[in-house]
Every structure is written in C-alpha cells, then in structure tokens.
Length: 218
Ligand code: IYR
Image 1 (cartoon, protein in one colour):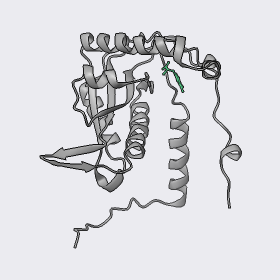
Image 2: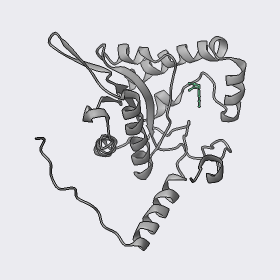
Image 3: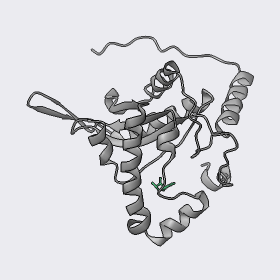
C-alpha cells in the first residue's frame, strides 16, 4: 500500500474565495513580458523562493523532470547572449517565414538580445526527458506539460515578487546545453531573464482575449 497523509485543505468563506480569486486575477493581469531590464541585482534568496514555488507544480508521476540553471556571472551571460544572437540572426534573416515575421512586428522584436547581458539573472529551465541509472534508462512522463506548468508557476511567482521577466525562446536552443555544460538528458526549455524593468520601459499595446472568445460553458 502506498503511504497517504491527510490533505490539508485551506477552508474559506464564499466571500473570501471571491475576493482571493479576484485579487489574484488583478495581480496576474498586470504581468507583462518586458525586454528592457535594469541591471539592479535580485537577491539570491528571492530567486530561490520563486524556484521553490515553480517546483510546487504537478508533474507526470511526480518525476519533477526539470532543472533550473541560474546565471548571474557576467561572462556567462555574455556568452549566452552572443550564442543566442547568432541563432536569432539566422532565424530572423533566413529561417522565419514572412507570416511569422509579420506576427512579430507588433512586438517590435529583432535578433538583438541585449537583455541577456543586462538582466541580473537568467533562469534557464531544462526539461529532463529521461534519466539513466547505471545501464537502465527511465523515461519521464508528460515532460513538456510538466515543465510548462512549472514555468507558469515560476512566471507568476516572479511577478508576485515584484520582479519582471521575459519568456525567451531562442531557436534552436541547444547552445545552452553546451555553454552551461548540462548532460545529454537535459534539454533547454525556456530562457527567462529576471530582474526589474528599466526606468521608462514600454510594452506593446496588445490585449488579452475576452472570456467569451475562449470559453464555452456546457
Ligand atoms: N525567438 C525569437 C522570435 C520570437 C518568437 C515568438 I512566437 C515570440 O512571441 C517572440 C519572439 C525572439 O525571441 O526574438
């Protein structure tokens, strides 16, 4: 028999539930991806706590198939920037179809990734599709779903702590495995610069879909 322990339910009144649902929504709706960071450092203890929060995410068979590499070393950040820019330059100039470039036009992005140098911390999330124990290889389950959910928790925790971030996806991302010296079973999943917005930074004037565009009640 597996070990079970009592579930600790947080009990609330209806009003409290409504209030908390609303205030969490009001917090989350102000989250934006930013691309201009100040270089003000973030205390390591905050980074530790937001990563602990990310790791409260559910995962397939509780395998927790994720690794977080936190890069604050300026030389390493520079290496990552240069490698990311080399890939992104190829992508923007040769690999991305016109339709994709058109979709990105509203975001004002290009291959320059200065934020990789400037942001005080880069959290690189790796997924772990399998582990090896001696001769044996064991596959993890629902790896992308699990790491994606953890990334969502991480972004919410970053925002809740008064920090800002970008979910950056240089493509292809295998240079991160190499530069950060990660083993074969760790695959770069997301590159998340974290810090504070540069004074006066602006964000694209884009909007979230209305509930009636995305929800069906049956
Ligand atoms: N990875 C590139 C391009 C890019 C792609 C999507 I989809 C975005 O939402 C934003 C950017 C870059 O980071 O510039």
